[in-house]
Image (cartoon, rainbow, N blue to C red; front, top):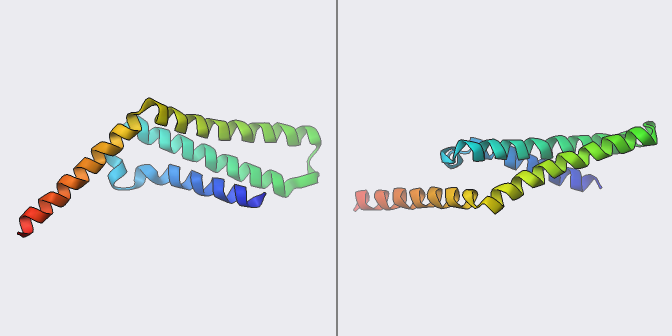
Length: 114
């Protein structure tokens, strides 16, 4: 079960740090904010799940279920934000724009060197 927490923490770090990567800075602001929200929700959910796993039997069953339900809500927020980005199609449009800019830059370098 701990591997799933590690994977979710890594997913949270990837999505949370995506707006800090050079090419992704050109994306619209709301997409970068959505990435941060999704990353933070996965990160907090993974930390909470790991803490709940390590706490184990030291917490009462009612507190355990309360924390577990909140962790599921955090993961649900992250998945929902990612699905919103994917279904809206704006993320793919922004990624195509970034790729086109990269290709123009590569072609510009190739023509300067010739």
